[in-house]
Structure formats: C-alpha cells, structure tokens
Length: 137
Image 1 (tube, rainbow, N blue to C red):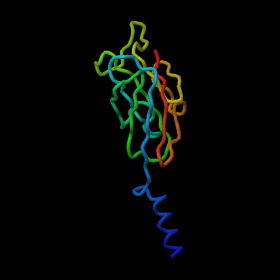
Image 2 (cartoon, rainbow, N blue to C red):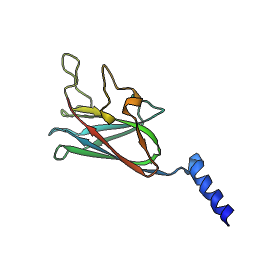
Image 3 (cartoon, rainbow, N blue to C red):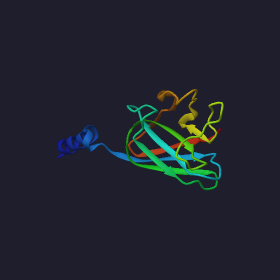
C-alpha cells in the first residue's frame, strides 16, 4: 500500500502531463486614469519578447489585477504597459521614450528594449503566487 502511494505521488510530481499548476496574480500599481493595462506573462523559454500569455485588464483606483490560470511552477517575467490612449500599442515620444506608464517584474531595467529575462524573472511555485509590477514613465 505504501509503495503504491509513493509511486502515485512520485508520478504526479515528475510527469509533465500531470504537473500541478496554480493561479498567478499580477498586481499592477501606478496606473493613470484612462485605458486598460496590457500584461504579458513570459516563461523562461520565451524570454521577454514573445510571450504566449497575455491579458488586458481595467484600471480601478490606480491599480489593475491580471490573473493567469494553470501556470506551472517555474521562472516567469512580467511586462506591462497602460494603453492610456486605447490604440493597442505602447506610445513613444519624439525622443523614443515611452509616454504611457510601463513596467517589468522586479523593476527590471529596460534600455532600448525589454530587459534581460534574468533581471525580470520571478520564481513561481506550483500553487501560483503574486507578482507586483510598478508602472511608471
């Protein structure tokens, strides 16, 4: 009986098809009144440029919350911007700087493009978790 229980637990934790996945909540602060916040959740294999999980969330009292379901344990980065003018893209000034609030997990620095994944990476457990992103100009 103990051997069967041990085998079942071992299989459930090691087989990819049976991996446990949780809910990841992304809390975005520093939003302005206006358009929605566009959020991307990036896995380590995707880096910070081609992320397969995306969300569009409304702003309330300077905050927005995005929830991503069935997120397996691993390292993830989050990138977000507030689409104040609701045109579907991050706006830039004549000097090439973003003119809409934006940010990355761990306040990762972005110079002339997205940050390195390792600078934005946060470890998420099987139960999920919370990542906070501060938006700013």
